[in-house]
Amino acid sequence: MVWSEIECAPREKIEALQLRRLQKVVERAYRQIPFYRRAFQRAGIVPQDIQSLEDLALLPFTRKSDFCDNYPFGLLAVSLEEVVRVHASSGTTGKPTVVAYTARDIETWAEVMARTLNCGEVTRRDIVHNAYGYGLFTGGLGVHYGAERIGATVVPVSGGNTQRQIMLLQDFRATVLCCTPSYALYLAEVAQEMGVNPAGLDLRVGFLGAEPWSENMRREIEERWQIKALDIYGLSEIIGPGVSSECLAQEGLHIFEDHFLPEIVDPDTGERLPYGEYGELVITTLTKEALPVIRYRTGDITKLTIEPCACGRTMVRMAKVSGRTDDMLIVRGVNVFPSQVETVLLQVEGVQPHYVIIVDRERGAMDTLEVWVEVSEEIFTDELGQLADLQRRAEHALREGLGVSARVKLVEPHSIERSMGKAKRVIDRRDVYGKGEA
Amino acid sequence: MRVKQLSAFLENRPGRLLYLLNILAEAGINLIAHNIVDASDFGIVHLLVDEPEKALQVIRDAGLVCSLTEVLQVAIPDEPGAFVKRVLEPLAKAGVNIEYSYAYSAPSSKEARIVLKVDDLELGERTLQGALGGDAIEG
Image 1 (cartoon, rainbow over the protein chains, first blue to last red):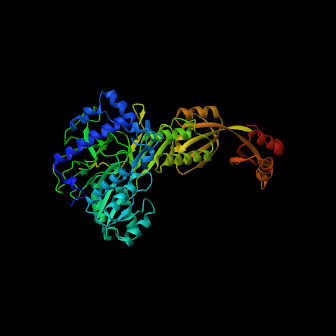
Image 2: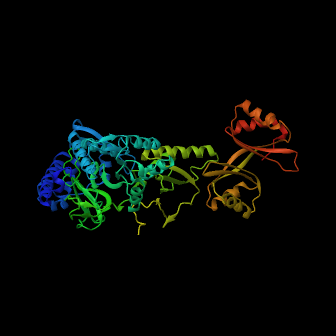
């Protein structure tokens, strides 16, 4: 049983609906949002030029930087009176990426999240342990509203306090786990330390997302918890979680394409690529009221397939995300850009620092983020306390600026590797995209 | 009384102090005293040497971060209470704060030498000159 009939509708029906909605959203964006009107005019396009789904390729792209340039509310198509909620995620520099929702957008979000949970056959009899963070991050509230829409019992536990989470999982006998894949492994580790066998709990399915993860990691999570671990995908610029989800067949993520129109483009040329080819995922929102987004460059590398799925859904499927087009890192579910780190360090030290970001994931532990900063003549002092204080201030500023804690390590000059005179900014020791898999 | 002390930044791992002191040894610079303070990842090594300017240059040339700081160096009798009476009490009375300090003495000598980094160099120097008189050594 699927949640909405449209999920299994014939392609022609889905595509006819998409075209109607696309024409409407393009018209609204052009009329209501000066940013889009200017962009369309530069491209020599008027809304009436969109006569088929193919014509989507005529439209200009939207990028993350456009959110920064129009911070905070410049991309809204409605007045703030109609906005009932905002969320935010990392920006590439100091300011966050702000997104907004009308009451109907919240309804749409609950609908696509209900579909997501329904992909794992969650019903009103289920108890959903929701360990995604509640707050500006879209994860917690996104899952929450979807689970309530289904009528399941939500445990809005949010992040942190892991031992207590194990106790609640045991006592409430949750059947559904919602968290990042790395937290799922960490939870299992903590359970075992507490003498609790994760496989002995009542959980049967997990909806894991907000960060990339490999098939190896999936196998480990499924093994340790004895659950079906489903990959879910979303991004706040589009709506949050609920853009696509795996079903129990685990053969790709169904994109809820009556709301989100996907394309794959060549990341370098922007040319559209056919089904089956890997490239950058681009999404146009078809129903968003507050923040319609035309051809958003997600930066995520994947491919699409239109082949029918064993589950009966006819909606296009995307492969598990296999990489990024940019240098964005995802650490404990939080997007981190090296440029943000640089901005923060510059503010703390007042000098252009030489730094390297090291991300690691010990087995069964959460991701660690370390920022190594070379000590220069400018910041060096003969007093240990002052350097230790600088270290603490940098750690504090990074936590504030990135939304995730980072350890700052002061290192000797020239100890950070430079290739061709340019420092390598990121060392990611995790194998999040499963590149190390056979 | 004022002397120039070298301070160098080192990562807290095996071989780094060796690396630093080798630079000095190879340049023929004599080490008079040293002191290490450390946080978990890194440490600062304070050095008194016979040729501080030259030492600064060779350490920097070797790619380490290093600076020269003016500190006070005094000689006191190597006997109980001397440090307290001759140095600490006068400085406390004058309101001079000691940021760090270390001591050394030659085995043949009857006196101990104290190195002090203070927040107010002028006042610290005047205070100790008054308190120690002829015992204060010229750096």
